View 1 (cartoon, rainbow, N blue to C red):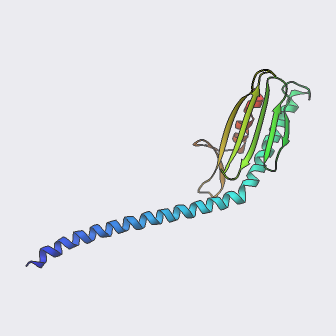
View 2 (view 1 turned 90 degrees about the horizontal axis):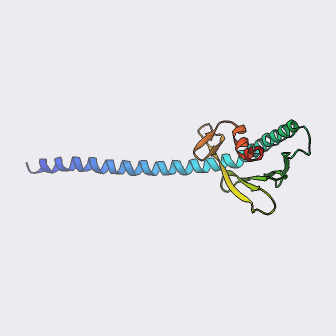
Length: 169
């Protein structure tokens, strides 16, 4: 008769221990999955980031060429000069005042495109400098996608527009 109450106490305790152990296993599994996902995303980034950068570079170059063609003459005050600066970088600039310089580069450590906009009203006034960043994120489709903050950019042209917009105004 004394054993029955003890067995009744053990069953709930065993259930509690089992729940605690399951929670620990689930947490460890989630951590393991998270590490595996991070390793996988690094692998995807390393294999696809250069091609994505080259696509963005081409998109920006085409937009600059189209803009310059639309101006009608190469000495137009809003004419934009464009060049590759490092293997994964670019510089686009409008040199007539108000001058605007935009540089962008693939940052492999940060997994992003970093860009800087420098504006000069005239030679005497110090330039204003703004820094920007487009994150490159691997999603469930196993592809790299551009993000501006938390906002996804559905097309590569959207990323190009964010980088180039200061030059067109």
